[in-house]
Structure formats: C-alpha cells, structure tokens
Length: 110
Image 1: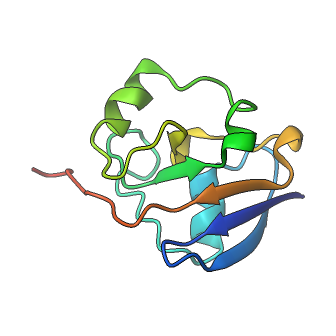
Image 2: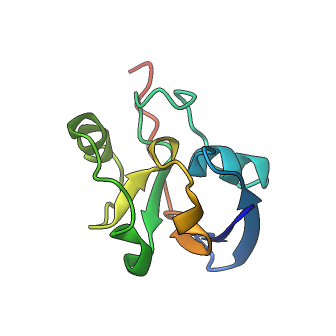
C-alpha cells in the first residue's frame, strides 16, 4: 500500500492509503474527501485540482498539454498544481503529501 497525506482547506490532515495504479482522485474520494471529479476522471474539468507538496512534485511525470489547459481553469493555481485524476500512484510516491485547494470551479455544462 502507498501512504498519502491529504491536507484539507482548513489545514486538517487525513492519512489515506492507495494501491499502485490508483489515481489521487480515486484515493481522495475513497477516503471520504470532498473532491468532486465532475468529469469522472476524463480530464474535462478542473474539479479534482490538487496541490502537490514541492518535495514530491519532481517525482511525478510531467503534466500533458491537455492537463495544463484544464489546470488553467482552476482557482488557486500553484506551480505544483496537478489534476488528481491524472496522477497515478507508484511505489516511489509512498508518503506523498497533497493539499486540497480552498475552492474549485465546475465549468461543465456551461
């Protein structure tokens, strides 16, 4: 199992576990966190925007051009922002820390 630490917008912490191949979105939702994922992981929204701790960001594969375009729609964008549906867990991410932004914007259907 891969251990994760989620920091909620109120700075409270939730420890969770996932398996290799799970996405951050899947683990967050499975742990009961309020992460919308309106497009169900199809990279058609930015409601699963998450901010990766700087110490871990460099261990992730680069975001695709399409992901970067979706991130442009996310409020509170950071230099270490990623879409939770696009970050798959691998063993090297055991212990990763992820912050949930204070707000999201659901542009689907508009």
